Image 1 (cartoon, helix red, strand yellow):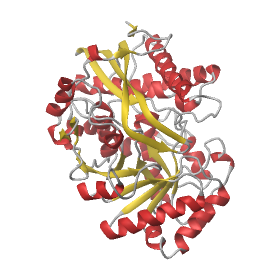
Image 2 (cartoon, rainbow, N blue to C red; image 1 turned 180 degrees about the vertical axis):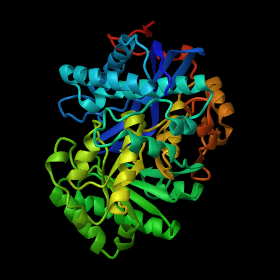
Image 3 (tube, one colour; image 1 turned 90 degrees about the horizontal axis):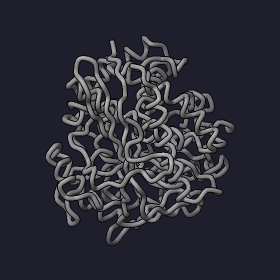
Image 4 (cartoon, rainbow, N blue to C red; image 1 turned 135 degrees about the vertical axis):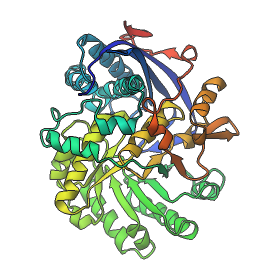
Length: 467
């Protein structure tokens, strides 16, 4: 039986993270963004009060790309989401399982977001962040890590949110998980990133044995193809066994996607690149994704949803439209990732393969963000994941040095000294995951310097949201 417990305290904080250079995705270029930090306490019967922690970047214009909203307004929506979710979780004074708390909060949070005019993906951000901290506390209290916790289903994950899955399928999937001992980095090539020269893709390849790449495309077919030819030439010369994914960040429509795919396949300069293409991510606007059938057979490469994955039923609806995969992203929810992984496993059993769960990144920062997201994808057996936080933020950013040292002592295999202090170690192009999965806890190991953080800046939250 999964333990039932009460949540007794939630505290939310933030820290601005300046970028080392702009990160351009879709139509947006980001030069700084705040990171949210969460600390919760639960009362676990027979054990007592246990604290859990989590962190996640609040990236502008990703959770909601409404052109009527400014970048700062989209960040404020995320702050409001976290504040509202804290109240929702806190209002449930009854004991429940971790997944039970999640399911109850998700329903109420979805109604709140709709009433507040906040996009569902942004509205669910607060729930996703709190779920990670709650699970961290539960696993710490039980003295186990994420891998064992998922196999034993100590969170009490059930089928109440996924009527297409039954409980036996969920339990069998969790019991049969085979975690990855290490996860390869899929290096992000942003739209503004140089291909050659200082700070370029060529320089990154020279510094680490990268094999996987995630390449942003912007919707200008001719411009995207010209850039892909240059990238393909570099990869074929420097990384003969490479594999790549394309991320359109909602910038394409069906005619342009068909032209892009056809050219990739037929152009001699891109034919080998096409053969090494593992998936195309979120080509269409999330608002039209489920209105437009996708001719997956004609495209001849799996197309997955990311921004359109804003509800527990989004992935099966996308499969019905021709999509063959979905992203795992901690900012969208760890339980959604686990349940979608179970769906992918079932689809592959039924259809003989071809469906994918991919590991993607929303600029996960060193410390809690990158550790918990890496542990999640490793627990699900994924062997590579997009990693870009180390690329766009220098080391631990403005975090005090003792805070960075605390995480490095907890997981010395993940960090190394860099020109700006401690940073994620990428020299081997892989992240060791075994100790992240072993616990105790959800790959936290240390905590931020809470006194060095600012309270979450929203009129609906104070430093201690409830006690």
